[in-house]
Image 1: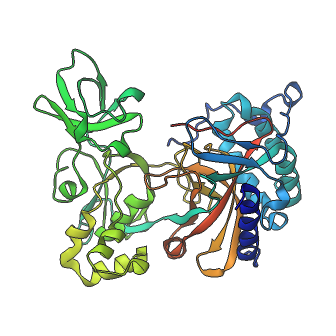
Image 2: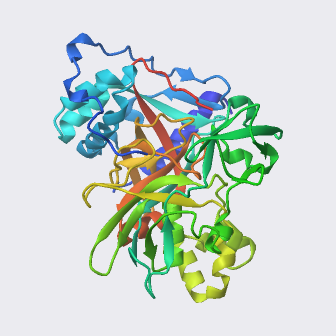
Image 3: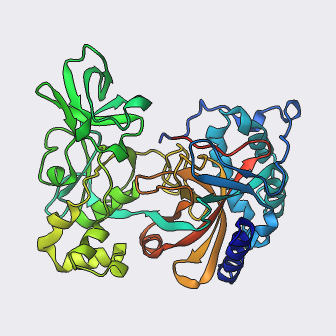
Length: 443
């Protein structure tokens, strides 16, 4: 089948499936005010020609210029919500010259569906994303959990929520060492920081650190004369952090706490109604592993039933397996207390608040954080209904890998969690970039 006929066949499937009835730092005052940028002194870029295919160097990802008419149910979008979410992105994007013009235009655009629709159509080019010619990718959902607990330990609230440990050290890792299995020398340079130096007092065997989590930073701890990987989840659950990390609160339920780590942010509610907003601060540098896949391999649950709800139900019925199952995911997340009103969404990897239904997590190697992103998939509450939405790429996650890969943010609370836990479907992605801005790959 030719490249053109493959694309037409894929759109036929997409149309049939998806044109059904549609249903991290806080922003600070020092950020430039994009609403005051001199629009008249800038100019919009030139739109890329329809059908142009761009493949960034060293990437297997293709980006093809599409028309807005190709996007399923484009004309029925709640554009005002998308625009409000994009304006949050502009709190950070304004620092980049190529985004300043569209951010200034966004500030001048009223929050109405019609005005917002015209804004996106006038100033953005939609690029359909594919990998090795495959248009479809994986779409999951996430949410901001609400945990019951307390700020002090009680007979009920017994499971600590940790801040950044004093002995967790991050070491910048140059590109040429990301896949290395060699030995380097490291010196501590500041609190929670170290550096690779030829005269370092500590040695680190890079073969001990998981390659898939290295990125630009190596995380671990000093022990003796060595720099070694940080404690695993199993070790931390067994008490390894006692006296090493601040405790921000205590959860009643260890399984709910586990899913707080998976989601990356949440809220702790005390019996008196006090609410503590918790945001991602750091992680132990170990790879994320799916406990659902482990449970399926052990025949604890069929893979199709390893949703968040299914896992919770099974562990509650089999408490003796609690430590075993949760310990299969060595990655552990540390939190910080967030300021702001209870109505404000959690802070995503981009450093701006997320908006329920209009924010998503992506792999930032392939998708620009802050960019609008059109997602076409099915609704988790009704697979016969299309979920086609212009959201904004404002977050990332350890389990979000690949160019056509989106984690859809549903908001906070039990209802959002129920829907997010069921979402696992094929989806299609278009990245919207300002005219003249080309898609990039950032290894």
